[in-house]
Length: 374
Image (cartoon, rainbow, N blue to C red; front, side, top):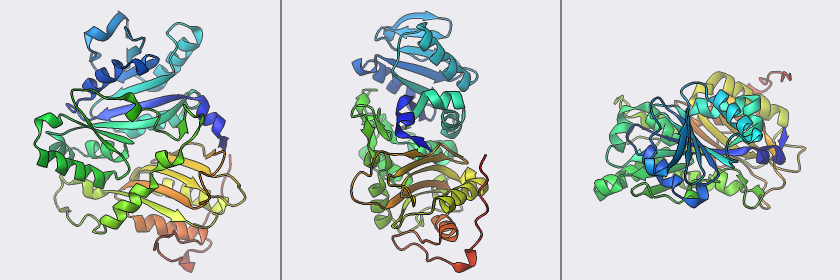
């Protein structure tokens, strides 16, 4: 288990996703005009030319572009891991301007999970960078049709920490409202931010992760947003009944977003065994997991963050944010019911999650495998 200082040491990385034509490049150009973005390196993980406004460009060399604001941009057509390693080395050697954060713009067809995996799994990358947040752009005019037709667009929206609604000036109010409601059902915790003509305050989308660089502390409430799932549950007990499950274009029905709570301290062995089994057998269905957990024997809370089968090393935080010691785990899943997760948790830990979760079934007792430690 790592300490907060390990997490805080890495350069924050913001992942900018969004489907083709949803306005990612316009948003990026708007961000790069902002003075607060001066010490930023931008990696454009896309085939083709960098779609940067030529008015922003100071000089260009090979695949590297230096902007008048001081930002550094490069196009990556190959391995993102190599690009991140190389960029960090160039920074250390003074070959590129000093930068304090990285923004990665993905190709419009990209599933964000593999890029998040890269930041978590590669030891050299994970030691130098940390995921701050995932931003997804959604086109107000074509967004509903895109979500209907492309499952990757639904996944992009479901795992985002912030959703940027573009082209609202070209859509009528009813269309915009319907899309906002749909996005809120897909991802209750992600604020929907309307972006007009690419104008966006970086403060709305940067430094949204667990670690708050400004205060040199953690902001659990901002990162987890557990209360958003409680509000969502109270207003949406229909389990997606309003969707036609026979319609192959309604990908939303396959996504579930929820938070469950555990009131008592959890046995660390049982908890890790449960996560290992859950991710081994149902990893592809676990789009994103975030949590703050009260483990027995630990005075301080432990933060967990996973994407599909891969977990970032757990981080022990300096202190609980308040007197409440309740564990809260947020899940965003695809084709995986909340009941399955809660029942397996009860099986491994002999505890039922709070808020009218299923009761513990003694038939599951003793199923936890011995934990193999490397």
